[in-house]
Length: 133
Image (cartoon, rainbow, N blue to C red; front, side):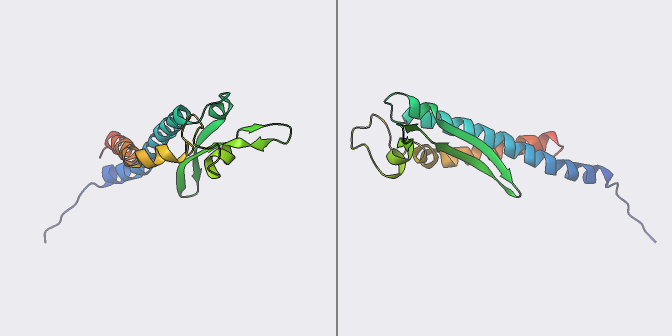
């Protein structure tokens, strides 16, 4: 009778590490995307008093199995706290002369989604290589 044995402990440890490595890579990539998205949105946002550009915020979120980047702008003015960031971005307001891109949050995502996906993929691959793959 012939027998064949393999030592699978190393493979099992590597597979366990790959889950953490994938999560780290995803978080690293999403953080890069968040920083790039925010910077580009700030660069192209309409400028009047610079309040709008200062109120652009971005964060990486992880809720259960969902992970991503959320970006927002909530610039208000006046006693009634009128949200002119929403007004410009969502209501196409300000006429043709707003000194910047009205869709300052959407435009960077539209222009960079393929590049950002590659960044995330590269970060995951890098972390998996460090974990032994």
